[in-house]
Image (cartoon, rainbow, N blue to C red; front, side, top):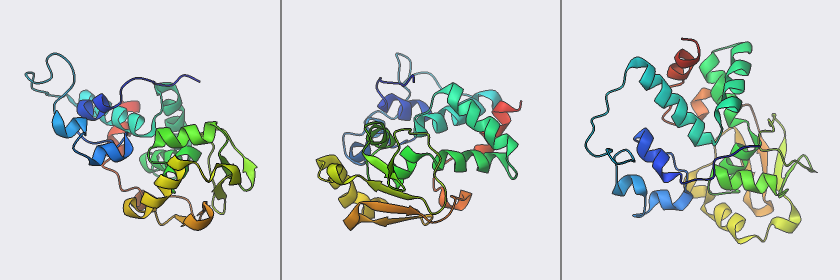
Length: 209
């Protein structure tokens, strides 16, 4: 599957806000957004950014795509699935994104970034209910048990992420047993559980315009 492999700090500068795509670096003095808080490119410092309604909707959609590391085709599929579900489309969309296995591994502090969590899943370090799942987009369900396989628990990156987990916080819809490298999905995520600066209504307006 296609994936973006270029620089990601430019995304924060483009979206005028931290997307926390580089883990600990985003909290340090090396953060590109803190050092150069203007859009990337030759004219980033001199051109005033004035967006139309369409531009505002587009930027919000791009921001969420980049937060979760998803390309356009897959993101559109998520929107269509959210549209078919009962309830509020925007909230359905965010809950589907939060229920991805790579995001859950990130939320459980098995990795410092979603990209790192995706790599863990791809490299077969993550088990769901005792079985290896190497599909980052796998949708977890309530009562699913997510764990790091026994042979992978001494990987330095995983151990460091677990230690830093309490500082970042674990969502209340998940439960972490850091000692045993396991987590439990207690309930589906709700909009209140997603503490991100996202206006999902703008994304719905973009796709339904």
